[in-house]
Image 1: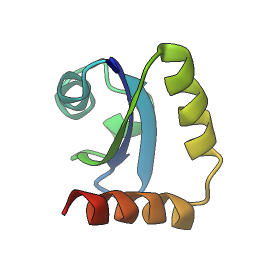
Image 2: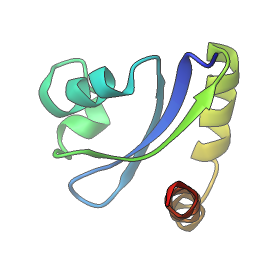
Image 3: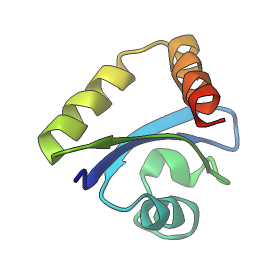
Image 4: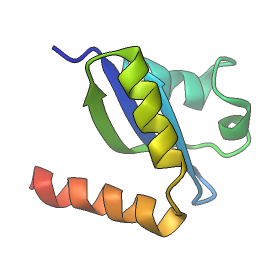
Length: 88
């Protein structure tokens, strides 16, 4: 059972932020309201969850996070759009 997640947040200024966590809801709360949010996201609130993907381990999640971070913004939006189509 996957217990790690890769997520992409859409920032208030339209940029995207990618991270990993074991609890997406808690992490989104931290990014939006707490001091534990990433420095990048603190100045770009409000944040909304745009994408999530499960991983079986922290190692796999971090590897996938790195892969996503290598994508261009256009490619990230395609990834987000593809997930929306699948979830319908």
